[in-house]
Image (cartoon, rainbow, N blue to C red; front, side, top):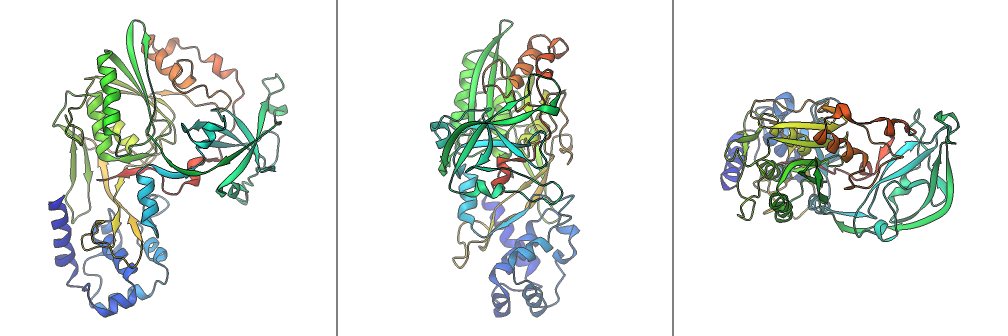
Length: 478
Protein backbone atom coordinates (compact mmCIF):
# COMPACT_ATOMS: atom_id res chain seq x y z
CA UNK A 1 0.00 0.00 0.00
CA UNK A 2 2.87 2.41 0.82
CA UNK A 3 4.42 1.73 -2.59
CA UNK A 4 1.06 2.50 -4.20
CA UNK A 5 0.74 5.81 -2.31
CA UNK A 6 4.27 6.83 -3.26
CA UNK A 7 3.45 6.09 -6.90
CA UNK A 8 0.39 8.32 -6.74
CA UNK A 9 2.28 11.15 -5.10
CA UNK A 10 4.94 10.82 -7.81
CA UNK A 11 2.36 10.84 -10.59
CA UNK A 12 0.52 13.80 -9.08
CA UNK A 13 3.72 15.82 -8.90
CA UNK A 14 5.57 14.70 -12.02
CA UNK A 15 2.79 14.10 -14.53
CA UNK A 16 0.50 17.00 -13.71
CA UNK A 17 2.54 19.83 -12.23
CA UNK A 18 3.79 20.89 -15.62
CA UNK A 19 0.25 21.83 -16.53
CA UNK A 20 -1.12 23.18 -13.24
CA UNK A 21 -0.27 23.41 -9.54
CA UNK A 22 -2.33 22.45 -6.52
CA UNK A 23 -1.79 25.73 -4.69
CA UNK A 24 -2.62 28.10 -7.48
CA UNK A 25 -5.30 30.55 -6.25
CA UNK A 26 -7.10 30.44 -9.60
CA UNK A 27 -7.62 26.70 -9.27
CA UNK A 28 -9.07 26.95 -5.77
CA UNK A 29 -11.38 29.70 -6.98
CA UNK A 30 -12.39 27.54 -9.92
CA UNK A 31 -13.47 24.80 -7.53
CA UNK A 32 -11.72 22.52 -5.08
CA UNK A 33 -14.20 19.81 -5.96
CA UNK A 34 -13.77 20.14 -9.72
CA UNK A 35 -9.98 20.18 -9.31
CA UNK A 36 -10.17 16.95 -7.29
CA UNK A 37 -12.44 15.28 -9.86
CA UNK A 38 -10.27 16.17 -12.84
CA UNK A 39 -6.97 15.21 -11.22
CA UNK A 40 -8.30 11.91 -9.91
CA UNK A 41 -9.74 10.94 -13.27
CA UNK A 42 -6.59 12.01 -15.15
CA UNK A 43 -4.49 9.65 -13.02
CA UNK A 44 -6.69 6.65 -12.25
CA UNK A 45 -9.44 6.39 -14.86
CA UNK A 46 -9.29 3.14 -16.80
CA UNK A 47 -10.34 4.88 -20.02
CA UNK A 48 -8.07 7.93 -19.56
CA UNK A 49 -6.47 7.36 -22.97
CA UNK A 50 -9.89 7.41 -24.65
CA UNK A 51 -10.88 10.82 -23.23
CA UNK A 52 -8.91 13.58 -24.96
CA UNK A 53 -9.39 16.19 -22.25
CA UNK A 54 -7.69 13.87 -19.73
CA UNK A 55 -4.37 13.81 -21.63
CA UNK A 56 -1.37 15.02 -19.58
CA UNK A 57 -0.59 17.91 -21.93
CA UNK A 58 -4.17 19.06 -22.40
CA UNK A 59 -3.71 22.50 -20.71
CA UNK A 60 -0.91 24.93 -21.51
CA UNK A 61 -1.31 27.06 -18.39
CA UNK A 62 -2.92 27.20 -14.97
CA UNK A 63 -5.26 29.92 -16.21
CA UNK A 64 -6.50 27.72 -19.08
CA UNK A 65 -7.09 24.88 -16.64
CA UNK A 66 -8.95 27.17 -14.24
CA UNK A 67 -11.16 28.44 -17.06
CA UNK A 68 -11.95 24.86 -17.98
CA UNK A 69 -13.00 24.01 -14.43
CA UNK A 70 -15.06 27.20 -14.19
CA UNK A 71 -17.10 25.96 -17.13
CA UNK A 72 -18.79 23.44 -14.84
CA UNK A 73 -20.97 24.82 -12.06
CA UNK A 74 -22.09 21.32 -11.08
CA UNK A 75 -19.37 18.75 -10.20
CA UNK A 76 -21.61 15.96 -11.48
CA UNK A 77 -21.66 17.59 -14.93
CA UNK A 78 -17.86 17.68 -15.00
CA UNK A 79 -17.64 14.07 -13.91
CA UNK A 80 -20.09 12.89 -16.57
CA UNK A 81 -18.20 14.84 -19.24
CA UNK A 82 -15.12 12.72 -18.45
CA UNK A 83 -16.88 9.36 -18.75
CA UNK A 84 -16.06 7.30 -21.82
CA UNK A 85 -19.11 5.99 -23.72
CA UNK A 86 -21.54 5.87 -20.79
CA UNK A 87 -24.12 3.76 -22.63
CA UNK A 88 -21.89 1.00 -23.95
CA UNK A 89 -18.52 0.91 -22.18
CA UNK A 90 -18.45 2.65 -18.79
CA UNK A 91 -21.81 2.00 -17.20
CA UNK A 92 -20.50 1.83 -13.64
CA UNK A 93 -18.32 4.83 -12.62
CA UNK A 94 -19.97 7.27 -10.25
CA UNK A 95 -19.54 10.39 -8.11
CA UNK A 96 -21.15 10.94 -4.70
CA UNK A 97 -21.52 14.05 -2.56
CA UNK A 98 -21.57 12.08 0.72
CA UNK A 99 -18.76 9.58 1.11
CA UNK A 100 -19.95 8.65 4.60
CA UNK A 101 -23.02 6.99 3.10
CA UNK A 102 -20.87 5.33 0.43
CA UNK A 103 -18.59 3.87 3.09
CA UNK A 104 -21.57 2.53 5.01
CA UNK A 105 -22.82 0.71 1.93
CA UNK A 106 -19.42 -0.87 1.32
CA UNK A 107 -19.48 -2.11 4.91
CA UNK A 108 -22.84 -3.76 4.22
CA UNK A 109 -24.82 -1.13 6.16
CA UNK A 110 -27.98 0.23 4.56
CA UNK A 111 -31.28 1.69 5.62
CA UNK A 112 -33.70 -1.12 4.85
CA UNK A 113 -36.79 -2.90 6.11
CA UNK A 114 -35.20 -6.17 5.02
CA UNK A 115 -37.63 -7.06 2.23
CA UNK A 116 -35.95 -7.71 -1.12
CA UNK A 117 -38.38 -8.06 -3.99
CA UNK A 118 -38.93 -8.16 -7.74
CA UNK A 119 -41.64 -6.21 -9.57
CA UNK A 120 -43.55 -7.90 -12.41
CA UNK A 121 -46.23 -6.75 -14.87
CA UNK A 122 -49.65 -7.63 -13.49
CA UNK A 123 -51.43 -10.01 -15.88
CA UNK A 124 -54.34 -8.74 -17.94
CA UNK A 125 -53.95 -5.09 -16.89
CA UNK A 126 -52.68 -2.14 -18.89
CA UNK A 127 -49.99 -0.83 -16.55
CA UNK A 128 -50.50 -2.80 -13.36
CA UNK A 129 -47.52 -4.06 -11.33
CA UNK A 130 -47.18 -6.50 -8.47
CA UNK A 131 -44.24 -7.50 -6.32
CA UNK A 132 -42.93 -10.86 -5.17
CA UNK A 133 -40.66 -11.10 -2.14
CA UNK A 134 -37.49 -12.91 -3.20
CA UNK A 135 -35.49 -12.65 0.03
CA UNK A 136 -36.01 -11.55 3.64
CA UNK A 137 -32.98 -10.42 5.63
CA UNK A 138 -32.71 -12.19 9.01
CA UNK A 139 -33.85 -10.18 12.05
CA UNK A 140 -34.90 -7.25 9.89
CA UNK A 141 -38.30 -5.61 10.34
CA UNK A 142 -39.73 -7.64 7.43
CA UNK A 143 -38.52 -10.82 9.12
CA UNK A 144 -40.00 -9.79 12.47
CA UNK A 145 -43.30 -8.94 10.76
CA UNK A 146 -43.53 -12.45 9.29
CA UNK A 147 -42.84 -11.61 5.63
CA UNK A 148 -41.71 -14.69 3.71
CA UNK A 149 -39.98 -15.40 0.41
CA UNK A 150 -42.68 -15.78 -2.22
CA UNK A 151 -45.17 -13.38 -0.59
CA UNK A 152 -47.02 -11.22 -3.13
CA UNK A 153 -48.04 -7.57 -2.76
CA UNK A 154 -49.94 -5.45 -5.27
CA UNK A 155 -50.13 -2.04 -3.58
CA UNK A 156 -48.31 0.26 -1.15
CA UNK A 157 -50.34 2.20 1.41
CA UNK A 158 -53.46 1.13 -0.49
CA UNK A 159 -52.20 2.65 -3.76
CA UNK A 160 -51.92 0.05 -6.52
CA UNK A 161 -48.51 -0.09 -8.20
CA UNK A 162 -48.26 0.88 -11.87
CA UNK A 163 -45.66 1.33 -14.60
CA UNK A 164 -46.21 2.85 -18.03
CA UNK A 165 -43.60 1.30 -20.34
CA UNK A 166 -44.11 3.94 -23.03
CA UNK A 167 -43.57 7.00 -20.84
CA UNK A 168 -41.70 5.44 -17.92
CA UNK A 169 -44.23 6.93 -15.49
CA UNK A 170 -44.66 4.95 -12.28
CA UNK A 171 -45.31 5.32 -8.56
CA UNK A 172 -42.24 3.43 -7.34
CA UNK A 173 -41.33 6.44 -5.19
CA UNK A 174 -43.68 4.83 -2.66
CA UNK A 175 -40.74 2.59 -1.72
CA UNK A 176 -38.67 5.65 -0.73
CA UNK A 177 -40.62 6.26 2.47
CA UNK A 178 -39.08 5.37 5.82
CA UNK A 179 -42.22 3.38 6.60
CA UNK A 180 -44.86 2.00 4.28
CA UNK A 181 -47.60 -0.61 4.32
CA UNK A 182 -47.60 -3.44 1.80
CA UNK A 183 -51.00 -4.76 0.72
CA UNK A 184 -50.68 -8.51 0.28
CA UNK A 185 -52.24 -10.47 -2.55
CA UNK A 186 -52.30 -13.84 -4.24
CA UNK A 187 -51.84 -14.96 -7.84
CA UNK A 188 -54.95 -16.65 -9.23
CA UNK A 189 -54.42 -18.66 -12.42
CA UNK A 190 -58.04 -19.87 -12.39
CA UNK A 191 -56.77 -23.44 -12.57
CA UNK A 192 -55.97 -23.15 -16.28
CA UNK A 193 -52.63 -23.17 -18.17
CA UNK A 194 -53.78 -20.15 -20.21
CA UNK A 195 -52.72 -16.85 -18.61
CA UNK A 196 -55.42 -14.83 -20.37
CA UNK A 197 -57.61 -15.08 -17.28
CA UNK A 198 -54.89 -14.76 -14.61
CA UNK A 199 -55.33 -12.09 -11.94
CA UNK A 200 -53.72 -10.83 -8.75
CA UNK A 201 -56.30 -10.77 -5.98
CA UNK A 202 -56.23 -9.01 -2.61
CA UNK A 203 -55.81 -11.08 0.55
CA UNK A 204 -57.10 -8.17 2.66
CA UNK A 205 -53.90 -8.39 4.69
CA UNK A 206 -51.68 -5.39 5.25
CA UNK A 207 -48.21 -5.22 6.83
CA UNK A 208 -46.45 -2.05 8.00
CA UNK A 209 -42.70 -2.13 7.35
CA UNK A 210 -40.14 0.33 8.71
CA UNK A 211 -36.56 0.88 7.57
CA UNK A 212 -33.62 1.06 9.94
CA UNK A 213 -29.85 0.77 9.72
CA UNK A 214 -29.03 -2.84 8.98
CA UNK A 215 -25.67 -4.58 8.65
CA UNK A 216 -26.06 -7.42 6.18
CA UNK A 217 -24.10 -10.61 6.69
CA UNK A 218 -23.28 -11.82 3.16
CA UNK A 219 -23.33 -15.45 4.35
CA UNK A 220 -27.09 -15.88 4.00
CA UNK A 221 -27.48 -19.68 4.17
CA UNK A 222 -25.32 -22.77 4.41
CA UNK A 223 -26.06 -26.48 4.44
CA UNK A 224 -24.70 -29.95 3.82
CA UNK A 225 -26.63 -32.57 1.86
CA UNK A 226 -26.14 -36.27 1.28
CA UNK A 227 -26.42 -37.00 -2.44
CA UNK A 228 -25.79 -40.56 -3.54
CA UNK A 229 -23.64 -41.20 -0.48
CA UNK A 230 -21.47 -38.12 -1.04
CA UNK A 231 -21.52 -34.82 0.86
CA UNK A 232 -22.58 -31.66 -0.95
CA UNK A 233 -21.93 -28.27 0.64
CA UNK A 234 -24.25 -25.33 -0.06
CA UNK A 235 -23.47 -21.65 0.45
CA UNK A 236 -25.63 -18.67 -0.50
CA UNK A 237 -23.18 -15.77 -0.55
CA UNK A 238 -24.77 -12.38 -1.22
CA UNK A 239 -21.82 -9.98 -1.27
CA UNK A 240 -18.03 -9.87 -1.23
CA UNK A 241 -18.13 -7.69 1.88
CA UNK A 242 -15.06 -7.12 4.08
CA UNK A 243 -15.18 -8.13 7.73
CA UNK A 244 -16.56 -11.65 7.24
CA UNK A 245 -13.34 -13.51 6.38
CA UNK A 246 -13.32 -15.43 9.66
CA UNK A 247 -16.95 -16.48 9.40
CA UNK A 248 -16.56 -17.51 5.76
CA UNK A 249 -13.46 -19.50 6.64
CA UNK A 250 -15.39 -21.22 9.45
CA UNK A 251 -18.07 -22.26 6.96
CA UNK A 252 -15.43 -23.92 4.82
CA UNK A 253 -13.89 -25.42 7.94
CA UNK A 254 -17.24 -27.09 8.60
CA UNK A 255 -17.43 -28.26 4.99
CA UNK A 256 -13.94 -29.68 5.27
CA UNK A 257 -14.53 -31.48 8.58
CA UNK A 258 -17.70 -33.02 7.14
CA UNK A 259 -15.79 -34.31 4.11
CA UNK A 260 -17.71 -32.22 1.59
CA UNK A 261 -16.89 -33.49 -1.91
CA UNK A 262 -19.07 -31.13 -3.96
CA UNK A 263 -19.98 -27.46 -3.53
CA UNK A 264 -23.01 -25.49 -4.71
CA UNK A 265 -22.13 -21.79 -4.51
CA UNK A 266 -25.24 -19.63 -4.75
CA UNK A 267 -24.42 -16.20 -6.20
CA UNK A 268 -27.82 -15.54 -7.76
CA UNK A 269 -28.34 -12.26 -5.84
CA UNK A 270 -24.68 -11.28 -5.38
CA UNK A 271 -23.85 -7.89 -6.99
CA UNK A 272 -20.14 -8.01 -6.18
CA UNK A 273 -17.71 -6.41 -3.74
CA UNK A 274 -14.02 -6.65 -2.80
CA UNK A 275 -11.56 -8.43 -5.09
CA UNK A 276 -9.60 -9.57 -2.02
CA UNK A 277 -12.66 -11.42 -0.68
CA UNK A 278 -13.25 -12.90 -4.12
CA UNK A 279 -9.67 -14.21 -4.10
CA UNK A 280 -10.04 -15.67 -0.60
CA UNK A 281 -13.23 -17.49 -1.60
CA UNK A 282 -11.54 -18.90 -4.69
CA UNK A 283 -8.72 -20.14 -2.46
CA UNK A 284 -11.21 -21.81 -0.09
CA UNK A 285 -12.87 -23.62 -2.98
CA UNK A 286 -9.52 -24.86 -4.29
CA UNK A 287 -6.29 -24.80 -2.25
CA UNK A 288 -4.07 -26.60 -4.73
CA UNK A 289 -3.07 -23.42 -6.62
CA UNK A 290 -1.59 -21.27 -3.83
CA UNK A 291 0.69 -18.57 -5.23
CA UNK A 292 -0.59 -18.88 -8.79
CA UNK A 293 -2.33 -16.01 -10.56
CA UNK A 294 -6.05 -15.85 -9.87
CA UNK A 295 -6.93 -12.55 -11.54
CA UNK A 296 -5.04 -9.62 -13.04
CA UNK A 297 -6.42 -6.09 -13.01
CA UNK A 298 -5.29 -4.25 -16.15
CA UNK A 299 -4.79 -0.52 -15.48
CA UNK A 300 -4.44 2.51 -17.77
CA UNK A 301 -1.20 3.47 -19.55
CA UNK A 302 0.37 5.33 -16.59
CA UNK A 303 -0.39 2.82 -13.80
CA UNK A 304 0.94 -0.65 -13.14
CA UNK A 305 -1.32 -3.71 -13.34
CA UNK A 306 -2.33 -5.42 -10.10
CA UNK A 307 -2.20 -9.19 -9.59
CA UNK A 308 -4.22 -11.23 -7.11
CA UNK A 309 -2.89 -14.73 -6.45
CA UNK A 310 -4.48 -17.73 -4.79
CA UNK A 311 -3.77 -17.53 -1.05
CA UNK A 312 -3.33 -19.84 1.93
CA UNK A 313 -4.13 -17.19 4.58
CA UNK A 314 -7.06 -14.89 5.27
CA UNK A 315 -6.61 -11.24 6.22
CA UNK A 316 -5.90 -11.94 9.93
CA UNK A 317 -3.22 -14.50 9.08
CA UNK A 318 -5.30 -17.60 9.81
CA UNK A 319 -4.85 -20.59 7.52
CA UNK A 320 -7.50 -20.88 4.85
CA UNK A 321 -9.76 -23.92 5.05
CA UNK A 322 -9.49 -25.17 1.47
CA UNK A 323 -11.58 -27.96 -0.06
CA UNK A 324 -9.21 -28.78 -2.93
CA UNK A 325 -12.12 -29.12 -5.38
CA UNK A 326 -11.70 -29.68 -9.10
CA UNK A 327 -15.32 -28.78 -9.83
CA UNK A 328 -17.79 -26.27 -8.41
CA UNK A 329 -21.47 -25.59 -9.19
CA UNK A 330 -22.39 -21.88 -9.27
CA UNK A 331 -25.95 -20.53 -9.34
CA UNK A 332 -26.37 -17.24 -11.22
CA UNK A 333 -28.97 -14.76 -12.44
CA UNK A 334 -28.79 -11.42 -14.23
CA UNK A 335 -28.20 -9.97 -10.75
CA UNK A 336 -24.89 -11.84 -10.39
CA UNK A 337 -22.30 -9.18 -11.16
CA UNK A 338 -18.72 -7.97 -10.93
CA UNK A 339 -16.83 -9.93 -8.26
CA UNK A 340 -19.32 -12.79 -8.71
CA UNK A 341 -18.46 -12.92 -12.39
CA UNK A 342 -14.78 -12.42 -11.61
CA UNK A 343 -14.82 -15.46 -9.35
CA UNK A 344 -16.22 -17.67 -12.11
CA UNK A 345 -13.84 -16.22 -14.68
CA UNK A 346 -10.81 -16.54 -12.41
CA UNK A 347 -11.57 -20.17 -11.54
CA UNK A 348 -12.34 -21.24 -15.12
CA UNK A 349 -8.72 -21.92 -16.20
CA UNK A 350 -8.10 -24.06 -13.11
CA UNK A 351 -11.21 -26.10 -12.35
CA UNK A 352 -14.52 -27.08 -13.94
CA UNK A 353 -17.11 -24.38 -13.15
CA UNK A 354 -20.67 -25.54 -13.85
CA UNK A 355 -22.79 -22.39 -14.11
CA UNK A 356 -26.51 -22.97 -13.53
CA UNK A 357 -29.19 -20.31 -14.03
CA UNK A 358 -29.32 -17.32 -16.35
CA UNK A 359 -26.74 -15.03 -17.96
CA UNK A 360 -24.91 -12.70 -15.57
CA UNK A 361 -24.72 -8.89 -15.69
CA UNK A 362 -21.51 -8.53 -17.71
CA UNK A 363 -19.24 -6.27 -15.68
CA UNK A 364 -15.52 -6.84 -16.06
CA UNK A 365 -14.13 -3.69 -14.46
CA UNK A 366 -12.96 -2.87 -10.93
CA UNK A 367 -13.28 0.50 -9.20
CA UNK A 368 -11.75 2.27 -6.21
CA UNK A 369 -12.91 5.06 -3.90
CA UNK A 370 -11.01 8.30 -4.48
CA UNK A 371 -11.07 11.07 -1.87
CA UNK A 372 -9.92 14.67 -2.12
CA UNK A 373 -6.56 14.22 -0.35
CA UNK A 374 -2.90 14.45 -1.41
CA UNK A 375 -2.77 10.76 -2.39
CA UNK A 376 -6.54 10.31 -2.96
CA UNK A 377 -6.86 8.06 0.11
CA UNK A 378 -9.16 8.64 3.10
CA UNK A 379 -6.22 9.93 5.15
CA UNK A 380 -5.85 13.71 5.04
CA UNK A 381 -9.16 14.23 3.25
CA UNK A 382 -10.23 17.79 2.45
CA UNK A 383 -12.60 18.87 5.28
CA UNK A 384 -14.39 21.41 3.09
CA UNK A 385 -16.62 18.90 1.30
CA UNK A 386 -17.69 15.22 1.30
CA UNK A 387 -17.47 14.41 -2.42
CA UNK A 388 -15.82 11.13 -3.45
CA UNK A 389 -15.50 9.23 -6.73
CA UNK A 390 -15.80 5.57 -7.58
CA UNK A 391 -14.33 5.45 -11.09
CA UNK A 392 -13.50 2.31 -13.01
CA UNK A 393 -9.73 1.91 -12.77
CA UNK A 394 -8.99 -1.61 -14.03
CA UNK A 395 -10.30 -4.39 -16.23
CA UNK A 396 -10.13 -7.88 -14.73
CA UNK A 397 -8.79 -10.84 -16.70
CA UNK A 398 -8.01 -14.40 -15.67
CA UNK A 399 -4.64 -16.12 -16.03
CA UNK A 400 -5.35 -16.74 -19.74
CA UNK A 401 -6.01 -13.04 -20.32
CA UNK A 402 -9.76 -13.60 -20.75
CA UNK A 403 -12.24 -11.13 -19.28
CA UNK A 404 -15.96 -11.39 -18.64
CA UNK A 405 -17.82 -10.22 -21.78
CA UNK A 406 -20.03 -7.17 -21.29
CA UNK A 407 -22.94 -9.35 -22.37
CA UNK A 408 -22.41 -11.55 -19.31
CA UNK A 409 -21.44 -15.15 -18.62
CA UNK A 410 -23.75 -17.69 -20.27
CA UNK A 411 -24.79 -20.63 -18.06
CA UNK A 412 -23.93 -24.23 -18.86
CA UNK A 413 -27.37 -25.25 -17.63
CA UNK A 414 -30.12 -22.70 -18.16
CA UNK A 415 -32.70 -22.34 -15.42
CA UNK A 416 -34.85 -19.30 -14.66
CA UNK A 417 -36.43 -18.62 -11.28
CA UNK A 418 -40.20 -18.50 -11.22
CA UNK A 419 -41.61 -15.88 -8.86
CA UNK A 420 -44.63 -18.09 -8.25
CA UNK A 421 -42.46 -20.97 -7.07
CA UNK A 422 -39.42 -19.49 -5.37
CA UNK A 423 -39.20 -22.15 -2.69
CA UNK A 424 -37.29 -21.90 0.59
CA UNK A 425 -33.61 -20.94 0.38
CA UNK A 426 -31.42 -23.82 1.57
CA UNK A 427 -34.15 -26.45 1.21
CA UNK A 428 -33.18 -29.32 -1.09
CA UNK A 429 -36.51 -28.92 -2.90
CA UNK A 430 -35.96 -25.22 -3.64
CA UNK A 431 -36.01 -25.28 -7.47
CA UNK A 432 -32.61 -23.68 -8.15
CA UNK A 433 -30.82 -25.86 -5.60
CA UNK A 434 -32.78 -28.92 -6.72
CA UNK A 435 -31.43 -28.53 -10.25
CA UNK A 436 -27.85 -28.38 -8.95
CA UNK A 437 -28.30 -31.41 -6.69
CA UNK A 438 -29.86 -33.35 -9.55
CA UNK A 439 -26.90 -32.53 -11.78
CA UNK A 440 -24.52 -33.75 -9.10
CA UNK A 441 -26.52 -36.94 -8.57
CA UNK A 442 -27.54 -38.04 -12.05
CA UNK A 443 -26.68 -35.49 -14.67
CA UNK A 444 -29.16 -32.84 -15.76
CA UNK A 445 -30.46 -34.89 -18.69
CA UNK A 446 -32.31 -37.02 -16.17
CA UNK A 447 -33.82 -34.07 -14.29
CA UNK A 448 -37.60 -33.69 -14.48
CA UNK A 449 -38.23 -30.07 -15.46
CA UNK A 450 -41.91 -30.65 -16.17
CA UNK A 451 -42.90 -30.04 -12.55
CA UNK A 452 -41.65 -26.46 -12.97
CA UNK A 453 -42.83 -25.92 -16.53
CA UNK A 454 -46.44 -26.70 -15.60
CA UNK A 455 -46.57 -23.65 -13.33
CA UNK A 456 -47.64 -20.20 -14.59
CA UNK A 457 -44.65 -18.27 -15.88
CA UNK A 458 -44.40 -14.57 -15.07
CA UNK A 459 -43.34 -11.96 -17.61
CA UNK A 460 -39.91 -10.33 -17.53
CA UNK A 461 -39.35 -8.28 -14.34
CA UNK A 462 -39.70 -4.51 -14.43
CA UNK A 463 -37.59 -3.61 -11.41
CA UNK A 464 -35.73 -5.14 -8.52
CA UNK A 465 -35.40 -3.78 -4.97
CA UNK A 466 -31.65 -3.37 -5.53
CA UNK A 467 -32.49 -0.85 -8.25
CA UNK A 468 -33.65 1.47 -5.47
CA UNK A 469 -30.29 1.25 -3.65
CA UNK A 470 -27.77 3.55 -5.31
CA UNK A 471 -24.42 2.00 -6.23
CA UNK A 472 -24.93 -1.39 -4.59
CA UNK A 473 -22.30 -3.97 -5.49
CA UNK A 474 -19.52 -3.60 -8.03
CA UNK A 475 -16.01 -5.01 -8.06
CA UNK A 476 -13.96 -3.01 -5.59
CA UNK A 477 -10.18 -2.91 -5.65
CA UNK A 478 -8.53 -2.82 -2.22
